[in-house]
Length: 394
Image (cartoon, rainbow, N blue to C red; front, side, top):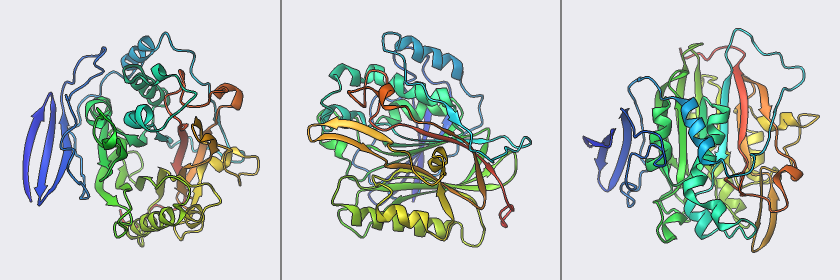
């Protein structure tokens, strides 16, 4: 494998070329563009749209002083001053769970942010005004949501502005940034697209050391499979304990339940291999495109990994998922579904708090996306902490 570095507007890329596969790795982030309408944009266009990066992305960045998060949040608020007030959400603290005062919680955020090309070109949100999806403002709505909750671990799907927006902005704020595009992204079929969409994983340097990173093409033996996942092994600076984190986005649409199940099973096998004999706690975040009644949900809920869904803690009995994580109106009609999850290891992690979901009245009759919310999926946020015995591989 040949390796070379390329510097583009303050970002240094490590390019590894093997056969026809190109892996781009952000290694160093220096001064990125100043704030303003360009929103820290560091790249003029997406790189290598024809690459099929099934190989590993391992992103190591110098530990520089992070950018001014409060200043960027103010910049977002300024850009959105003509938009209506955003959805108000509060954290819920599960009964009977006593936080460890000696341990700083880890905030995890899971969100399908809606690919810009799909929102404007293919998804047909008939009740959403076209100007509500304008990228020049919608990107600020997305960033404002992220900055408001300040996650230590951020898992995103449908990211099609990674290289010109989310990668450089979040790297400048102190995150290690990893992106895995879909091999045959539907965004590429939209005129004037910004490249393929995919999964992205952002880990705050001040909280974790990235020890290992692997990108997967799920159920790759199936020709129709186009879904990916990122799996990373982290070590917590505060506790010295290890944590395995995964992000994925499974096949959408009804009629594809068997493929979602195959993709989920493929990911579970990879996670079992990654944590074999170690009891390393797991966090698995994603848009599974599957209701709790589907087989892929049951596979995760009953796996040997001992996983549970964090958002179930919002229900009175801690046994039911929220009634919706996505709510939209398309040409085919209204869809209100629970498709997004944060799975956590019951033996190694405890959930201290979970962000509640907005009510139907707050969302409004036109549903999502809207002037005050940028995606058709709601973000999931929870605070977790280590519990139980430390993993055996120290």
